[in-house]
Image 1 (cartoon, rainbow, N blue to C red):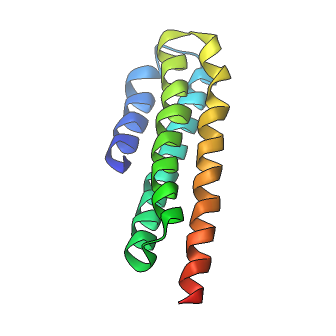
Image 2: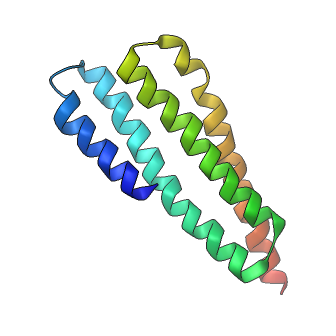
Length: 114
């Protein structure tokens, strides 16, 4: 996911800059930035799984993955296709990311109980 975040960010900066307006570039950059943040969050979730075996840590990982796919994916598609209704599903991905962070917190609390 981190590799793809770098690749999509570079694609947006170089290949899209002359093809779409500044607002669409901002949207693309937001998608790439959140993808990178949550690619790193996947490492956190994996570490928590290794430390705690907590179900919450596993749910966090899957939530981050789903969040990246839905949040960033819908924004990438919005920019590439101009299909505005895709912006309506972006908050579903954001919600999945929030669930992932809550689950990381719950798993981290279990780590403290050990």
